[in-house]
Amino acid sequence: MLEVYATTRRVAATNASVLLLGETGTGKELIARAIHELSPRGTGPFVRVNCGALSESLLESELFGHVRGAFTGAVSNRAGRFEAAHTGTIFLDEINSTTPKLQVKLLRVLQEREFERVGDTETVRVDTRVIAASNRDLLDEVARETFREDLYYRLNVVPIVLPPLRARRDDIPLLVRHFLDHYNVENDRHVTRIQKDAADAMAKYHWPGNVRELQNVVERCVVMADGDELTADLLPPALRGDRAAVPMPGRGGDLDSLARDLVEQGMTTAGPGDDNLFGRIVSRVERELIAQMLAACDGVQLKAAARLGINRNTLRKKLLEHGLEGGDDAA
Image (tube, rainbow, N blue to C red; front, top):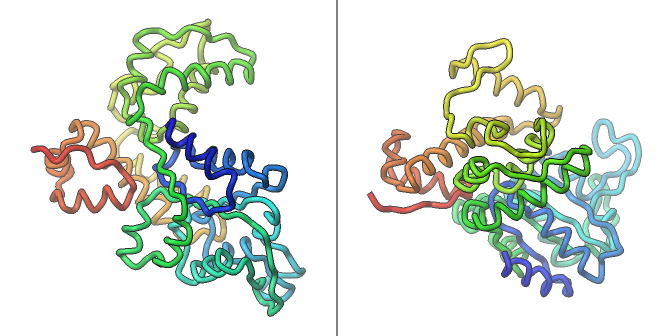
């Protein structure tokens, strides 16, 4: 992380494009904000766009704007996020989820600093710095021809790789203390001590959700604590080593019921323009299953593949797809 911070400071003073790589929850947006705030553009706007949350047509309009009549519902002209970020920085999160059509337009913006709004012929010029992020290996996406090679190299001027929390366990006590202080103030609580069993459990846990998951766990503990100590019983079952399924309210805890609840929640929370429900639901379950199984097998791929019922080559491919660490190849 010291190398990450040093690179962040060095690149902030430039206008170079930055590509942030790392698993979900490792703090890519925080680094993007730090680059912006430390740069000469720090007084300008910082605009974040989650490319994975919108369909192609909606994302194109969101990024580049549109003119009246460009499509059904376009009742007036609207500026896009690139224009909103003029003289500042635009942060394109989950850039790996963009389509080839959008990648062509993004490449032009990066090279020429110009584009046309959807449905318009007038060229718009902007002075906007681009920081992109991906939770997948973009070189692998290039090899699979789902991501343009020329766009990859244009984005990858300065790559910054954020390590997962399990790879920097010495940071866990510091982060826990930081989040304790934050949520004590936010909730007017005074949880100042950490029980040794709780600290040991947090130090050993594999944290598939990384820093974001740790932050949520600490917030939960602060809210639920009766006194001034964070105790092990306040931690979620997974951190305490209890891998038994936790029943959903009003239903049994069998896998079929849990699967129905998961799908219902995914469909309910999806926006009207979201058309990638497979990626939102199935892919995330697959990623979590692989991460937990690899951790349960102490990182031994052969053992994890056998437990999952797949061969090791398939497991390796899945690890790359989901941006997970590969563990150890030892049998």
